[in-house]
Image (cartoon, rainbow, N blue to C red):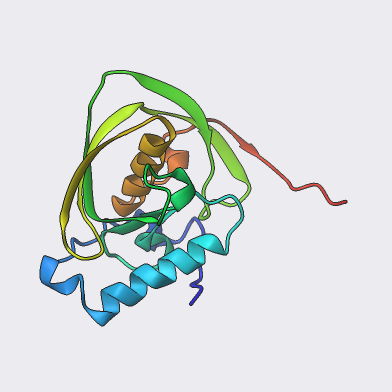
Length: 164
């Protein structure tokens, strides 16, 4: 089911999501949330990821679109994700967000990170993400921590679609 995406200034976007107990991950509620997040993300234009907080669920779950993952065979589901820098290198790039439609800005993020999370089956995972994948994960984990990219961005600007 496609869920409604919360739009800034909705106060839920600024709340920290709750960790999910490993025993709850296989529950119908969490599995349905994961399926709904995937469907909602795919229903949007130009999306690379989505966090549960963006649909009003204060649960530590985010999805990275398969096009941007290292496996590319399925969307990457991260439950209770955490990351640490794996390099001191950082870079600026432009970001946008479903919850802040039409607004873009440049955000400085680490280029290489070490990610720890649980998958949709409750299995522990740990991997290194770099470049664009690292950026997406940092953006989505920020959502789970109640932070929007516009709070970190420079050169915020509007982008209006052209009408043909």
